[in-house]
Length: 252
Image 1 (cartoon, rainbow, N blue to C red):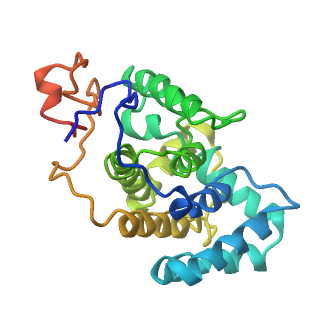
Image 2 (spheres, rainbow, N blue to C red):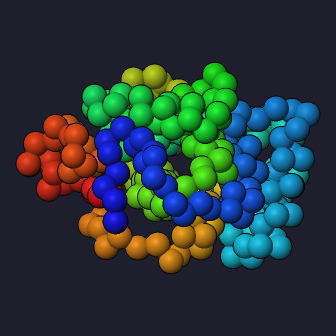
């Protein structure tokens, strides 16, 4: 298998092209993670539900509580929870580089290379970063090379979604709220029983990715990014130290 360069540049001799229509549902999933708009969000949610009910029954079962919540509550309530989940006093973040690297400088390197891939695919990222989850999910529908798509999905997206889901653990949320309450005095939507409703969407996405790429396996160790570590380690152009190389997953 070819090594994937740190800059994620596509090889010029690619041979195995993927059927992009097969992955078109990721565009519908991407829409759910974009900031909600009053006139369209409920329609987008129900559209995704229709797609999943036909093709991914297990994922549909996971996301159904979210669909029902959006349909049974006013838009501003949904908007508040979206904001709380991904933006202000957030549970987790939508920028993949931050999820993987935090404030480490490798986040910047990753973002630069993702921007190159987005530009090569002619994907308009709008006002969000190139590694923002909706933009990366949209990229999945535009990639023509199956090998690169496999690696992006299995070695980056699936581990990222797992790390995002880890942040919904009650103990982690409680710890964050404790720190925020001490510093900011106020916790948004405190004691709201539906605060974790977007967890259902992430679980469904994890299920879909696992299903779509079930035949792809790299026998890699579990991702354990560390400060200073390089997620695209041992790729021929990386400067990661040997110590950090032991702690991160490779894409080679």
